[in-house]
Image (cartoon, rainbow, N blue to C red; front, side):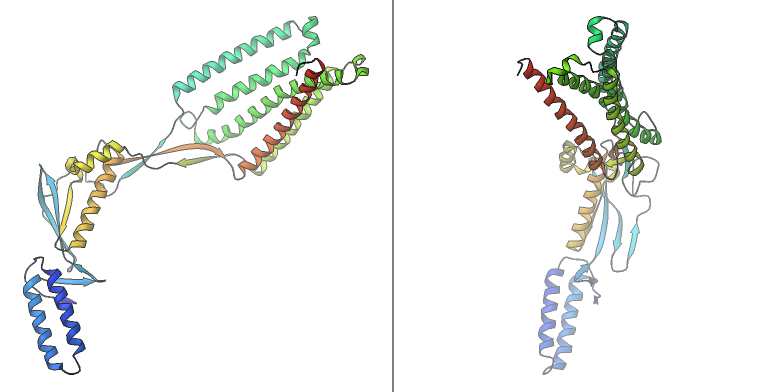
Length: 372
């Protein structure tokens, strides 16, 4: 329903209600007073025409004229007008001002930013790791050089070498776990996911397996008095360590074939500074590039327009306090696969059983000597 009226005052709330009520009353009396219905309805239309200008209803809401203002040098300047009824946008030439020579963007540009591992922290850990590897290398050199010494020979020098080599492999995995996409490409990072997992698992099994084998030999000797006269050679201990490594290789190969590790990216929400939120809420005119407001002769339309402008203002400014209309979305790289929890559960269960078994044998040995 369109009503032709003369001006754009704000009497719409009163006249429209009167018009609707009068129309309903006339419709109820239509059977008895048909002629009066036509005359009175025309009178109401005439009163509406004199009161409120051209208006239009769509989905139960009134459509009016929207005026666009921009803050320029501390004051509002009209830059355009939109007629919702005629669907006509009228912009005043050369009235809108923006910062810079380029046209303003119609949306906030979201830039992905990789979250790097803290370089100073990585450097400190790398330095400590290098010192640990140097110390392990010194122990390895000492063990090889004095392998024929009576005390060294009694402590199984081959097992000692395996313990040291396993520790050095575990040390090396620290360097690999500290590398991210800032140091290597995406393809190299995906390869790195597999390499560092293999090195850590093999290094741990080599070191722990050698200690487990030595503990088992001591336990076997003191468990039975008859075995004190029997020597358990290092070859048997090497077989035990080799069996543990074989189980590890079977798990790792199945893992790599069935469900290999892949590079995945986890994106976080846009970074927003709380102090900027309060500052711009108190002084929204602080952003010259975004200072467009709009008013309307219709309440709901004007309110929606103002809320939209304020949302654009906060969205662009909060994303980048320097006013470049750039939002930062951090992301982090991970090594994951489809059934990550299952594979980790298998590895942890296998290693956990070995640790419990080794601790039990160590407890029995200590009990033999009275250390409980």
